[in-house]
View (cartoon, rainbow, N blue to C red):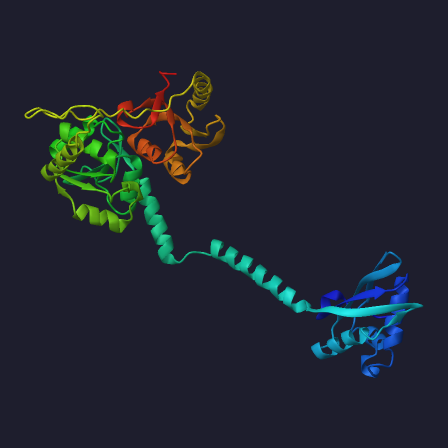
Length: 413
């Protein structure tokens, strides 16, 4: 007897069957063929349809419980929609199977092509996604990628302090001074070659020497750290102009349009000094707070400002120091950094150059970092905006009193 493959079927008829007694699977199949014979005419005779391959193998599953049989009938069909519905309805005429009463009810007619169509759509999405990821970029994208890579490769070292700098320092009358190497890379990427980094909060002698020969534009981050760097620059170097990144942003994060806008809106050093003095004055002036029971100040007496407790920093305990000391020894010479949670578990190891960007993506759960290098101002600024409590390094260019994060050097361990 011929049968069609389930792959070529268009519909699947599913029916439930209830039998008042115990019968076998061949009894059910015999009842299906026998009680529908001659009911639908020669063209829809079930035996002929199965012989010609227009319906497939009839599957019957019977489960006997408490002396009664319950089960399911499944018939695959390659007939059209109307003919499949007629064959399905014919199953419900079956009332007896062997000596037992029976009841058949069609529960569902499934269009197999719908599930196949959904499978095709999902696979097409996967293929399209793969094409987008691997397709060759157009000529403009290639040119941009190559030019940006070349600019990043142009980061060199300048002066006896070996400061990160672009290739246009000596040729330019004006030099842009930024905080760190990442700032230099970002400005080079957008076409500014006359840029040099301080590499920390203290002003290197190379910057002081440059300020005597060149016009200096100090380009700092839009945060408290930027103010600290400006104060240091004003104290030892001859700064001509000052500009800032937008509030809360760092120079390394700026897009090309933001960089141009910041440089166009630069101000003179004298104006920047005045703004800094106004900031200091506004912080110094506080409304005097009186303790309960204290007498008001006498006429002519200068009111005393309420003493504010200095913010306390977290401190490493002895076991933490021992564990971190061992980790620091293991990092010697690797130029890498370990990120730890509050249980001293290592969350990951990253190169020093990627530490700041990694901390920005980890909003919580970071307790300490251990690094084979020196603590810089840009790393401290990122740490203060995160949940980080401790930075352990070989040495530090940031004074512990200048930040809220606990900085521990190898000498202190």
